[in-house]
Amino acid sequence: MLSEHLPLENAATVARNYSHTHAEDGVSIATRHMDKGATGSTLQGLLQQIRFALQFPESRCLIVNFQTSIIHANKAVWNGSNGGSYAIVLHFDESSSLVTLSDSNHESFYRTWVCPLDVLFDAISAVDSIALRARGTLMLTTTSQRDMYLDCYGYDMRHSIVHHPFKPSVWPAFHCLALVASEMSRGDSTTGQSVQFSAEDFLYSLSSFSVHNVLRNELESEHIAALANTAFERLEIPLEANAVDVTISGSFIKACCDETVNGKPVTMTLLGYDTRPIHRVAGFSVAAINRVRGTEKEGLVQLVEGNGCTFGSVWERPAQELQFAVTAMVRIRRR
Image (cartoon, rainbow, N blue to C red; front, top):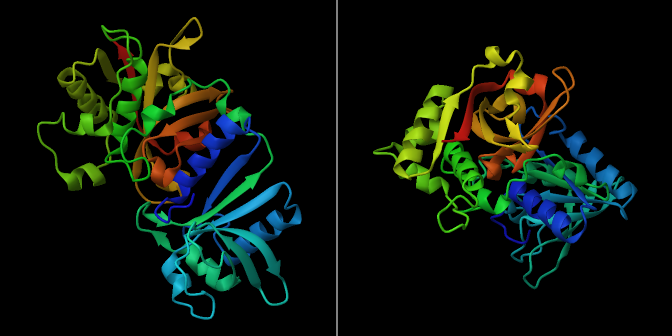
């Protein structure tokens, strides 16, 4: 978390992976972006987080991700050293509305500094030029995060961040296709070794492409399936993709369920979705289904995100909420 160029969601991914591999899932991490109009993205919302964390500091820790230029521009706040863009909240003075922070930067300088609450709010509400959305906070608690790993397909997340792990995906659809192809090709090669693919492999399999279209286009199921099948053929990957007709399945949550053999999935499903109702940020993205639980009314769907830098590597939503955001569904199986 020391890098000033590490976006908020990537910092959360690093922390979750550390908790999973080194702390027996004993720490949970929750992100909150200060996107305009999002829940809790107000000065009062930030104050509530600070009070919540400081109420039980032995089991809660609030980390803020801020725009350094806003802090540096305020000579009354900054101490003149080159600090980082992350800091731990240590104390809040209710009478003066001053927040005491411990900076994460590894350089030698005054690590602890004090900032007015309104200045800090402006700094964490600024748009991150890498993630292309507002910065925000990380709330670490001693609540177990083990449940997020139960009953999942068990994607090897090393496949999900093959190239440029801390930058936005070149195209979420290709990022997910690379992840799925890597997973479904494990052990299938003639050498018996795993084959790994990157989003760039799929991008450059196209005969031509426009960077503007790649970054802006919202894709329908048939378009994603066609792109996938063209890439599978040119990369000689024995997979095929088909658009999913939700009406045939009878319900959205049933359509999300992959085929299984002996309890293991033999298909994998991609969802294209409108990001505004899910993340409160305008745009389009693609994610791979990682787990489905429950029934239509109370079901939950967990997904591995194709643009983890901006929206988080793994997230989960109620099926009813997700249904209205999904604009494309594609199922991939072995040939």
